[in-house]
Image (cartoon, rainbow, N blue to C red; front, side, top):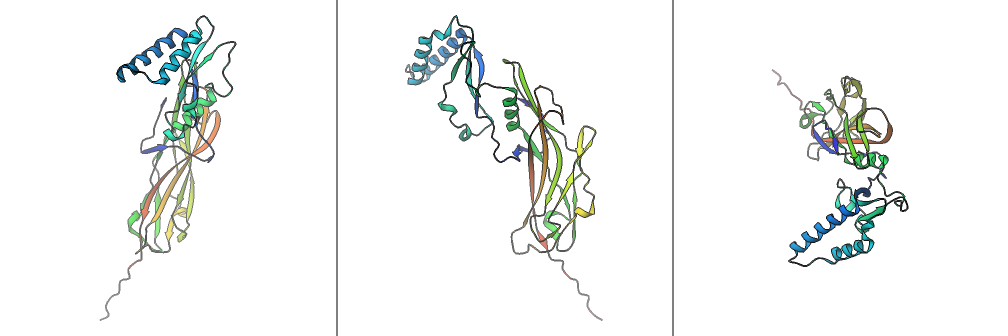
Length: 283
């Protein structure tokens, strides 16, 4: 897996599709019959050394089962191995651990549908491995020094680069590259006691990067209620990323087939105070 990062506090992509899940496991072509026997024998020997000369029932069963099949020597085909998605937390691999680890694939024994790696599956793997930078906006006055009924100026003018991830399987000569391009910035004041409570900006292309124009007065936020004595407001800045993929190892921003939009979010605690009145003494 290769890719790029725009720096900042990069975190795994949050999909706009709540039902989207990355493939937990799949089969890839691995070994010829001789290669698989050598690999399993090495695993068997290592297990015996680590367990003082005893080998687990699993290794004994696997070795005896393969010996009975004679590793498919003389047959036209290859052994495919089960691969778990290492970008998923252990609890999300489902029943992958219950699936047989090796699958013989040949002209007369095609793999079961949906088990073999494809460019589409590679794109989903790359999507799940994508990390997006979260960018804070600059507030004036500062986040912890806001005042009631005083306009808060929102500044965000740093260029943002596209992010890309390539998943490639050289043994099958296939690849897929996912590219995420920033398309919108959503600002939320963190309370209904703000005018406006939220606003939106659109990213525009500027050379190889993307930027937003945050100078519009219409999107400046004014807090109408103080947080004095209570919890601060949570000010959020969320970037929406338009995501596409191509069946190549080369990133092509804006080209290819669409995937669900991605989100990256940053938060700031905002404390709002009442403006203190200054009373001049009379003479």
